[in-house]
Image 1 (spheres, rainbow, N blue to C red):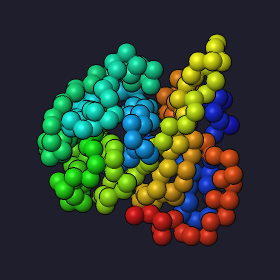
Image 2: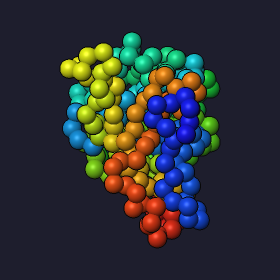
Image 3: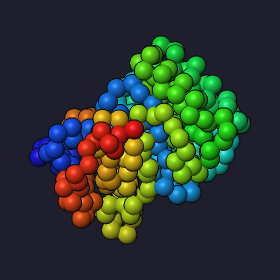
Image 4: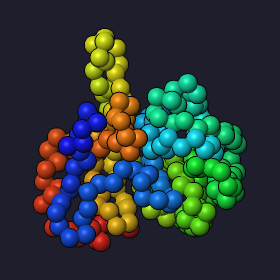
Length: 239
């Protein structure tokens, strides 16, 4: 049990060969990660990505198209600190998804950024497998993590190394007012990954944890114990 977090330890899905404990999202290096919204107007995707960005003081490039801003809303600056984010956000607002892809690829090549986040709505033609492959290669070459938030997309092909689907859950109980909403909870489904077992967890950001790496917690949903008995090899599940 991790002593500085109220959410405890990340669950081990299986003791079988090739199946490892679930790493913290964003801890696997500079790669492209997709985050899909579980439903319309669901802000869980934004909160999850913010919680994964860490405490770097280097700026984050955040690019969005017009339809994403209408569905996901705008970032609220004062709330960023609640997710442990200590840097600055360089916001770029464009109209077309192709401009989002161009800004993300060019931005990832700039020194001094801690991450690049892009928001694209739906599954436009320009967001092809080739386009995501370019982003994946740029992230790994430049050493800059790239997060692609895809709202209104049910899972088109992608070269992302991890693909998450996020949905909002009822919030935790407020410590001072049981009638008020508490800290957010999300259902986080890792449905495709390389070298990692998929699964579904309840995710929460715990700002009271002493170590930054322990502040985003993934813990099993009720009834998920059977996942440890899955006989399929991780290699068969990974993309």
